[in-house]
Image 1 (cartoon, rainbow, N blue to C red):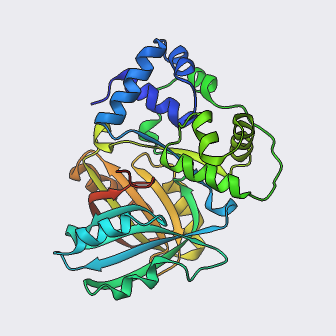
Image 2: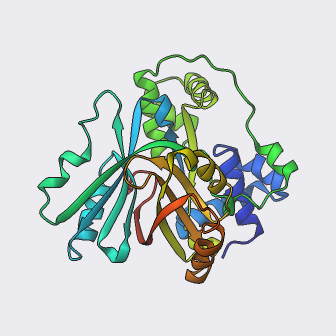
Length: 316
């Protein structure tokens, strides 16, 4: 399990993913060397990874939640194949290992260029459905609250980056290269980013600040949820009357048990992801807190068995 320094470091990275180790150490009351050692240990042993991500709405992308039902003998192989694609994230095996859930990212001006064109050619796939993500209430730039309880308000304020007013200018080819490099490692140094983009270090620093200030670029932190006592994860597919959808989704977004809440198209128009200590806790959440939402007409629960790919690209 994580100790107080580990949790503080992870919380700090959620607040400012590119904060220096010395700055984090000052806030946590430990040395720079201690923060650096903890960071490297968590990377090696706990799957810690900082990932820079483009905001879909500001970078011309749409998100689709894709559900595939496959034959048990081939589902894991198919999931790994999907995980290797650059246009997917959060590839997960669910429902006893026969269902794959993933997010597909497609250009708004070219909706046909998506993985659904490739899937029907795979004989092992027995069913496919795609749900356009219409609005995200929880998730994306907003992290799961279970990771955000380590630092005091004073410590958080000391780590939050200063707000920057930036011009709403179109993205350049260099911006896309910069974002792509940060998807692989959100803490790459300015010198490494300069080498990747061919820009001067000062230009990289300025473009990075501009993209963050405009909300075009945000950062996420990957880490094994089991280290926070989570042993049970599940997708919750819900159908809610349209008139009640916004109120229900806004309420669910305040629940500590949930890491994602989003409105989608399809027969189930609200999706959530639950993170719970065990199956008993999931049952209590479903029957009490979620059960209190009378506007939820139907609920389908799909336990997550394996996370094949998280938010960032696969690494060797």
